[in-house]
Length: 411
Ligand code: DP6
Image (tube, rainbow, N blue to C red; front, side, top):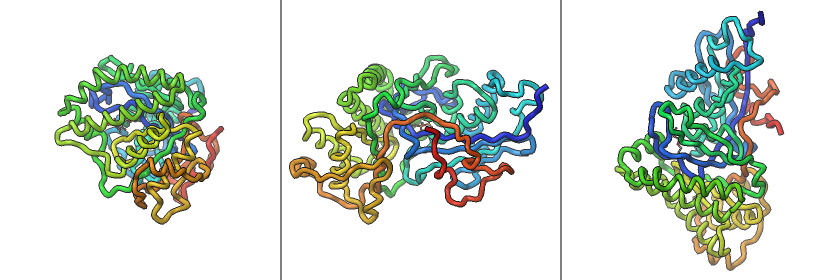
């Protein structure tokens, strides 16, 4: 009989994803089943990622959770829902390295610590990366080998798309039990190496309404949302998949912008209306349209989620010009050298024609900073014990800086 392992610890990372065909509205609030399918690009973890450590031990007396260095209530319904789901899967699928018999690890309490390598306050969608990372890490620590969409989805719908790299579709599914509402990779990140992504962190005073509450209000009051889900999105999904497969940037970009605009139109059609975009978001939209008009083709494309931050897609050969255009129209206020983070972008001088075409009065400080990134891989396991966020006692390591920041991702 195999001996029972008294303690086990696993650390994993997971990426942020940005939808180009948006998920907005649930047909089942409990199971988190969407009204329509959606499609996203997984962003590279070198720039944006969540790291999660999970430890299980027969000596732990209760489940515990630390988020970004602070212990938080482990009783949150969505976290509990993920734990229940992983236990259900664990009973069905035990991996080959499992003990197989004896009192299963399933009865052990779990300690979880999770942190982002980007400021949570920046309003970047951290819940998708967070719950994908939780699902992936729990699966490894409990020895579950199964498709994890259902676990991640119970935390946050969009999280199931962060389980895969590259370009990812979340099938809405048809079954009432949601077993067919799963994420699937359309193409790996290597499929479109020229694609670049700029995350524009916009200055904003107000905290926007959360997506869970916002989308529920849209479901209850917006006729446009119902129309979008049944009559618009199915054809858009097919077209977006074609654009990705054929690396058709003009088609991809135009559809990305139209779908973002329609999502925000459904927010305005919600009663009382919801407004996630601010003046800077609109100025970014104008800049992108003028940039494209100047070039006579779609060279850049914006998309906005439930907040004023923009994500702008472009191709490598337009990246330098686009960043120069952004810096020209939204000059940094004081942190000049920190305006651009992430992938290096060579500074270039804008032509007078392009400056004139942009027709925006430069206003300092409206964009706090820009993160340059690209499409990236799905969740990873970090084998180096130094990367664990929990110590050998299963408690949060002393917060001397951010330990996972120094951990290189497996290449
Ligand atoms: C606008 O996945 O955050 O980012 O399922 O209620 O947790 P819940 O919502 P969430 O909604 C994401 C909405 C969106 C669009 C998208 O990512 O598809």
